[in-house]
Length: 118
Image (cartoon, rainbow, N blue to C red; front, side, top):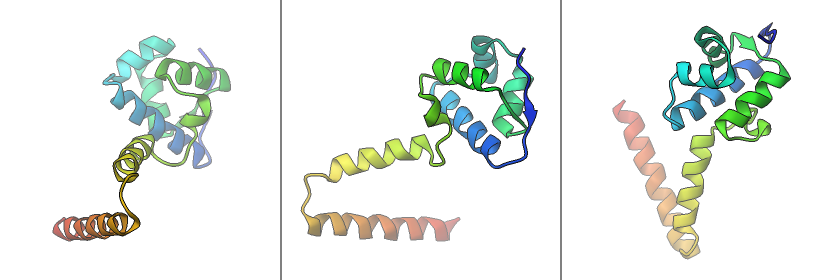
């Protein structure tokens, strides 16, 4: 097994969140991912919690198994959110500037309304 180091920066939590998000997108359990990268489930759990930072070789293996470039695992923004944003932008690309502003204001109002209900 590779040697992991205890986390002391924000990077491990970011990495763990991105790995967990991608694993969930694929519909995999921690056990499935652990089996594919040949580590135990507890190691995947600790990586996803940001408790440990795996070696670069293990990171490359995780990225490969998850079907992502290594850089994607280190991105600070959510991949899922990026995908959703791109989908919305695609819907809006043929709208006029006026209509795009209308959509933006409508979404902003809906988000405020929903946030106030929570």
